[in-house]
Image 1 (cartoon, rainbow, N blue to C red):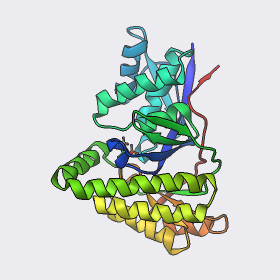
Image 2 (image 1 turned 90 degrees about the vertical axis):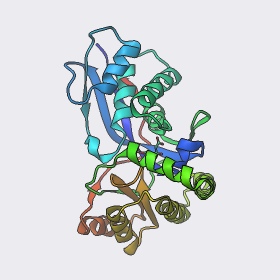
Image 3 (image 1 turned 30 degrees about the vertical axis):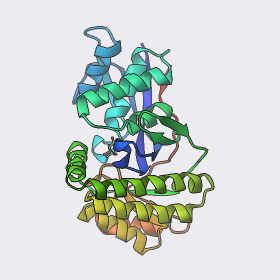
Image 4 (image 1 turned 90 degrees about the horizontal axis):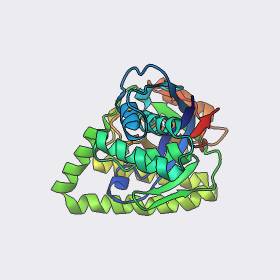
Length: 282
Ligand code: PMV
């Protein structure tokens, strides 16, 4: 019997806009989830849907994760992707992506699929919904990750933004457009490893997310703590409202930034970026 593993993810740039066809940048992280045959437990919606799509009736799988589902590292997409690969180890990345994205859309409603792409392909990706999955030549992004202690409700936040967009279409489209441009700039600067500039772009992205109304007091607290002691830039990562913030830091500043985040009540999570995508465990 086969087991398969898939990585979690962190959104670096472009959340929310990506749902409406604007680009984003996501990185797969060293935290991962392993799925193999066994008695299903916990929230089995994604495993069940994967079995329904590709498995045999009555087949059960169990997921073991190196990270808590509460961080917002994309456990739902990672579990879906890993289950599909465990069922059909010969499936291509494209086949796994297409089926997993369909499952995530059915269960979660509106979603861009960026997290599914990270779980399948790994690395650091420039992603445009239904259009582009481009692997970027980037290794080792100097990130610090701070967890707010608050679980974000992604579906509710996506709906909030949709309501805002219906109420103020021009304003919200302008924000998405500005975020989209910034993502293209960030892609280039990340490839050049111009981290100082990438940090500035994170700050700009965070301003737009604030304007969209998806930041929170706790996120802002962690972000200002990181910035206050010299991070190049910082922003929320994902839907907002809670989950994690990320900060870009020099080697020299890493420790003080981590301490500052901890001091204001954040939990620092150590990860590495650009992890490999889904694979079969022999
Ligand atoms: O909350 P997360 O980490 O799943 O990120 C959500 C990012 C959104 O752009 C708001 C939604 C999406 O599916 O792209």
